[in-house]
Amino acid sequence: MTTVLGIESSCDETAAGVVRGDARAGRGEILSNVVFDQMDLHSAYGGVVPEIAARAHAEKLDVAVDQALNEAGIGLAGVDAIAVTVGPGLIGGLISAVACAQGLALGSGKPLVPVNHLEGHALTPRLTDGLAYPYLMLLVSGGHCLFLVVRGPGDHERIGTTIDDAPGEAFDKTAKMLNLGIPGGPKVEAKALGGDAKRFALPRPLMDRPGCDVSFSGLKTAVRMVRDGCIADGGMSEGDVADLCAGFQAATRDVLVGKSKRAMARFREEFAQVSAPGFAVAGGVAANAVLRAGLEEAAQEAGFAFVAPPLSLCTDNGAMIAWAGLERFEAGLSGDMVPKPRFPLAGNPMTGIWSGKRGAKV
Image (cartoon, rainbow, N blue to C red; front, side):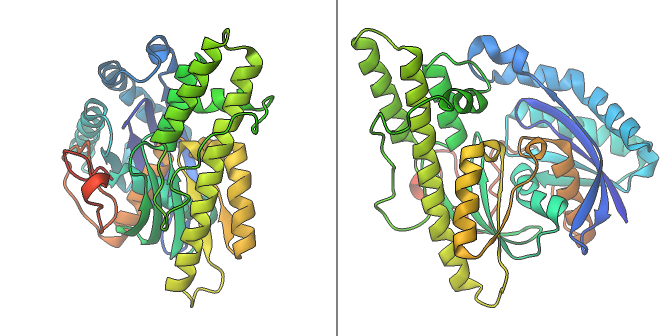
């Protein structure tokens, strides 16, 4: 059995976790999973401020590591390797974590394993449920939206992505437009509980086009236009806010469920020999109960086993980085320790409008 310490600080969670397991068995044991969020630091700004996040990571990383090791009941000498997120993410936070991991490795003599943050999410269903390769993954978070065929550590094929905004970003911007505060996703979900999802006619972008790519920029704009219309008519009531949140959430669900059905059909064509295929969802937006229910129903209809990690493992955490590091360590995969704000996960990076001015993002 291999034991790995994982360190994560790519955005606004400072996290460390210890995981033990055997990658061949495909399921691990979480010995500890410590997460410090920064909501109080960023709430006044309506979103994450990179410089504030970086300073908070530098202050908390050693505390998170020490607590994770103590909760796991082992010292640094008891781990076989140290895994750390090297990208993608905010450069200040990545530098803080890499420096921390390098110091720990230098002092302990333990090997370092660089991990792509997105692979941490993508392999979480292996940690929690032992999902067998290959499987289909929807990675849906604040900064990313990817449909992946996961064949193994370091072996991923992208079959769909967002051409503009990620759904988590759209949730956050919707919450900001409606003065709901942060984190945006849970705030919108809570408001939507009492709303009428059919009151406002919101678009379902790209559903009229083939393929698995998604878009949320137009939906976000439509929300702003509805909000502005309500304000012009006398102001936003609590009912207006609830109905708009419900409508936005329903539109996001419809797009992701519809595109997931296409991705499952494509997976079936490519892997006809897989008798019991798996469809997994991970990332912060995967914590949304309405989205989970829609995806689970779609998976059952298509004959896929649906896997969604516990809510605590949907958002950024150290245990997922430890597990991805464990799988990479046992597979003998290497990489450099240079922090990368942009770090494509799949071997078929998108080009053109998907890549951005500075190259492929994911």
